Length: 476
Ligand SMILES: *[C@@H]1O[C@H](CO)[C@@H](O)[C@H](O)[C@H]1NC(C)=O
Ligand SMILES: *[C@@H]1O[C@H](CO)[C@@H](O)[C@H](O)[C@H]1NC(C)=O
Ligand SMILES: *[C@@H]1O[C@H](CO)[C@@H](O)[C@H](O)[C@H]1NC(C)=O
Image (cartoon, rainbow, N blue to C red; front, side):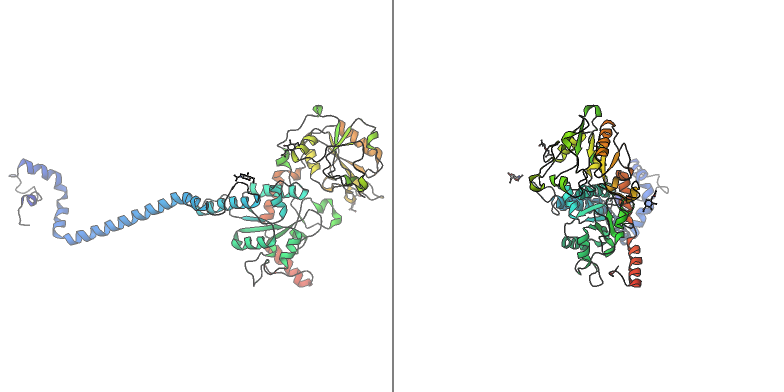
């Protein structure tokens, strides 16, 4: 360059002919010296430089913008989902009575949040559809045997991290299933509902209804022995191990799901025996239990007890025939809520069975609260009277248990009754939870149910049915 403005001069090399440069310029040279080659290039190819810079700046800005957007999205995702989730599946409104729908909404919030943030916990993205009404009833405070069973299965499903969704009839079940078929592992329904869904082309999965529920995902919640599902015993869930305790019901293949009263019971402290009166609790909610054919103690006169014990019962409904009422000698405490039931049970020394109701969860509560149970034997083989496999007892789930936990007395054996009661009242036990009925044992079985390869099992069943020509066919 031959131009020589003051500015340009200062950009010239310093090592040749630099001796006449002023000290002011020297300082400037020292500063900008190492940029000189660059300056020269810039002077010679300004367009190139401009274009290259433009490309770099554009690239950098693009990456920066992308990063910022990505980061912002990541950071804000929880917040923004929370923001829009408040408009979906409303939760916790005052005076809501549909407890189960509220629970569904909470579960959906948790599921959508974790799926969008990609941080779902183990099993959370697997849904278990709870369609037997006993599940919805159990969280509304109902306490029938089925409700207690349902509550404990629900606890296990939740403890294992699965997402439970309640539906209460087939129409709702089918509609819910269609929304996220891939996420649903299994549906638990009543036996009758399983049969009606199976026969309903708008419920069951077929080639013509691909979003229907596959027959093999549907399990019957059946309190009693035997099969109660279109796919038979292996799709029938049982609260007791009927294969073992009720061989006559042909339940060898039933799924022993069982239950646990551990969560409720462990919250209640055991009352030391010394602080309990000599009192026994008679298991009877209805007064007509004392007049049914399975009533175990027809000859017994409670008011002339040969032993020192008082008997109490919480009769919720006095429905005895001809106004016969509760037998004298038993103090009726009337209808008891759950708290009161546990309070009176907890201060008793034994729980007395009278033949009905069958398979009530209460004897498990009693054992857990330190009370032995008197289990009437209703039927036995007269030629083999001590063979328990052939026994039918009030509570078959406990028929292989022995004293000091469970005392078995044959129906009508009056002396045996008083002797067992005397021993039970005098021989206290510690808290006792039947090993198969701990929460841990239940969770193990529930996990096997949910994760089982039922499709494969159903495929074999279907082939058997095709080969034999017996049993209803279905699509996988
Ligand atoms: C709930 O219902 C009761 C009775 O109908 C009413 O008095 C109360 O104000 C309601 N609560 C709310 C928060 O709306
Ligand atoms: C149960 O009944 C008792 C006595 O009647 C009462 O004091 C208590 O509040 C009731 N508890 C519940 C949870 O309803
Ligand atoms: C008890 O009865 C069952 C069923 O009939 C039988 O298989 C078993 O051998 C019997 N047990 C004894 C000890 O006799």
